[in-house]
Each structure stands twice: as structure tokens, then as C-alpha cells.
Image (tube, rainbow, N blue to C red; front, side, top):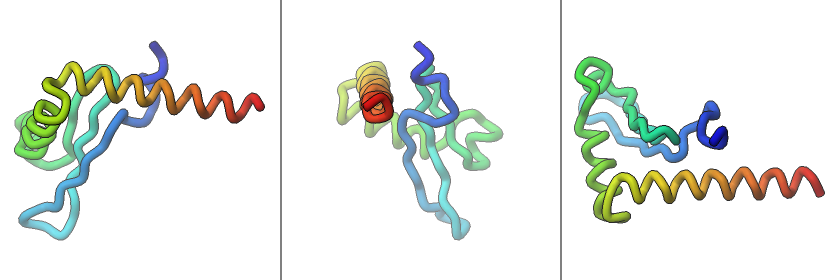
Length: 88
């Protein structure tokens, strides 16, 4: 399944920092990894941003695995549509 092993995540979310004038980015990768670039995640491997995204995915899709499957399918569709446009 090479479609999700690329250099781009399946989905990204941005969160405004409460203490600094910048944004933190949470990324969902095709292998199921979910990462954040905030200092809390860097040190503890979990943070409120990731928890917020997981809560959102659970509410919207009924679970993380269903959300992951949905975003993988979306990425496959995007790539298939992109290849169709190139080959025409």
C-alpha cells in the first residue's frame, strides 16, 4: 500500500498556541501515526492537541480506525484522480 507512505500526511489540523504567537500542527499519517509539533508532544509523546483530534475523530467517525480508513480512501482517490488527469 504505497499510497500513504509518501512524504505528506493524510490529514492535518492547526491549533493556535495559547502562550506563543504561532500554531501547532497535528498530522495523521497513513500508518496510523498521529503526531504534533508542540513541545508537549515532543517530550511526552502526547498532548492536548492530539487528544482533541482523537476526540473529534471519535465523534465524527465513531472511532479512530474508521477515520483512518476514511482518510486512506480519500488519499487513494486523490492519487487515482491525479493519475487519471496525467494520463489523459
